[in-house]
Length: 415
Image (cartoon, rainbow, N blue to C red; front, side, top):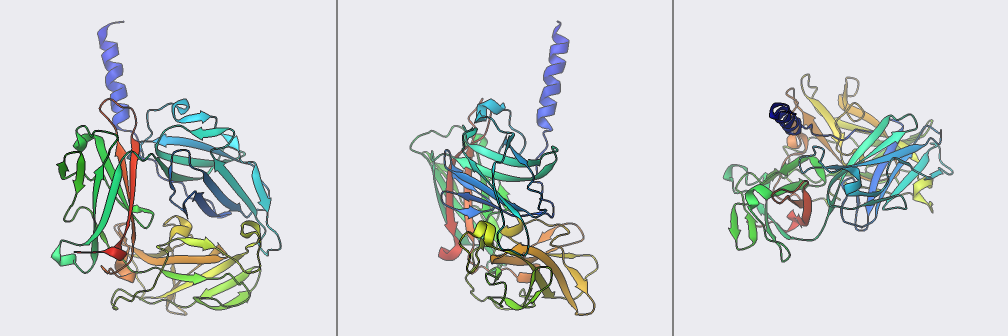
């Protein structure tokens, strides 16, 4: 073979790798609810766990069919483009296996089946760190939903501190994340090229800041201390409700009604952007399943239709959504609010499992831009959780390792 076809093939594959598509999560259909991850240390929608730690994925299926579901695990680069690793390089054993563990609901108005999957298991074990996505398929090979998770090794120390914005214009509205990376185990070669970072506020990948480069290097310590690039809007404390007792009004619930299932009508919320900040402890957008007189929450907690309402003037170009960790911060027709001329409120109803939920109202303008603080406001006093994930790909390496993970809270914010 002449050199020209070989050169053509090389250029072709280089172009393919350069145009690798970023993979987004696929949201679940209406009959799948309450998707949760649980690791050794945390229960949330964004699991970040150590290599070889236990990860449990759980979800409910409300169609009453006791259907079969299969899981597939894929490895990704830092930017969520598919990595170049073959499956046997990042997976010990096999995936594309049926989820065998499930149980049916007991003594509930809403019938459902509760599924759970543990990784590692007898068939599947992860071998390397990095970005992963788990995909759940039905018996016909149709993708039901997918979720991201991250696996790391403690090869680097990550110190995180939260500061008030150094931009005087937004000093009362933004929070800045400073962090330092050091390692007793490895030497950072050419860190501006080999080290990548992601900073996440309240487990929400939608608003994450990625690929900040170290500003300074002191010995083997990398320092990130940006004026504006690492700053987040402070937001406001999340609103919350609890419906652990479906037969009575609880925290945030104005009244209830029993139809096909119980309906929980929340108190009408108001615009908080033009009001002073008020400290109101929350769980940073997360949710916890809880129910009275239930021994096994997985199958004994019932589903209720939760009615949200917001006092807001009608808009014709912008849309309002209610979201949180309970729906993976998705923006779709399920949580899009509709203006009701009869009440003068924006309203939406969602079927949710009994529990304690954080939520917030957000706006998406005509350009498709997410404005998280348009309704709730932005305040530098707001308590937020921040996570910093550190990736490393040495020169010539084929995938992005996660070598460190750090966490901080704006409860300890300083100048």
